Length: 264
Ligand SMILES: CC(=O)[C@@H](O)[C@H](O)COP(=O)(O)O
Image (cartoon, rainbow, N blue to C red; front, side, top):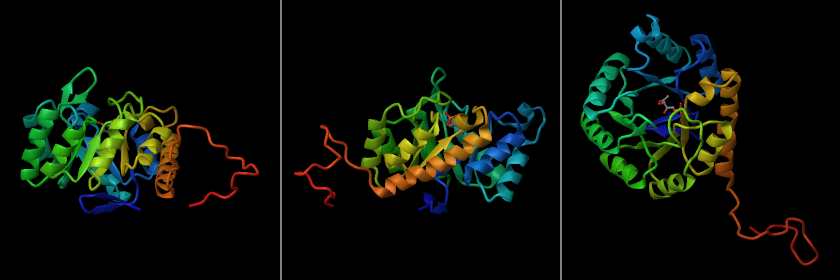
């Protein structure tokens, strides 16, 4: 099954970031090994001037073109709706896409998104024809508001960006999933290891967006491959139907008075 992003069907459920790798060459190999068909780039943080003159945007555009990967510009580093809206317009000019990962940070300590500025920017950008993928906290009502504004894709965090803590609050994430069955839901940020990605898919999430877990691994290319297997495992588990949790032990070895076969 594919991941639906505003009507575009994407074969991989993994979306990958392009920052923090040891080198552009390793980043390229890792992106390819991950099998991701969507990669993010940060307009503010990956500005060519800040990368020692290296034309990182051209490099990413070429990688995207050669491997049929879609670019998802993001507004990382923005702190107000106005700033994010300005950057969004620049990104549309530069990369000719209406897709935007909208990130408006409210707190520098844990890089927590600002829900009020996020809603404000979302409204303005949807009115301007953007297709918004908002990065938000795992707050049900905020996700509902974003959906009501027209966000077909919503991306609650697993935990703060770059912490690798995995799914801090699976209960919240599961509640959002069950209350917004029509939305494409992607867990974004805080994923530390492949098992976190599997857990997100097992909760019924449609995809996972990550960067640090691959870029900061000792061997980013091998880790990217591990995540591609995790996505397959998680998707298969989702389709296979996970057994219900029980409060008490039940023997799995049959005795004379218990059936050998499970009745479906
Ligand atoms: C790549 C990107 O868009 C990041 O802002 C994203 O949220 C990734 O977070 P991690 O680095 O924690 O995976």
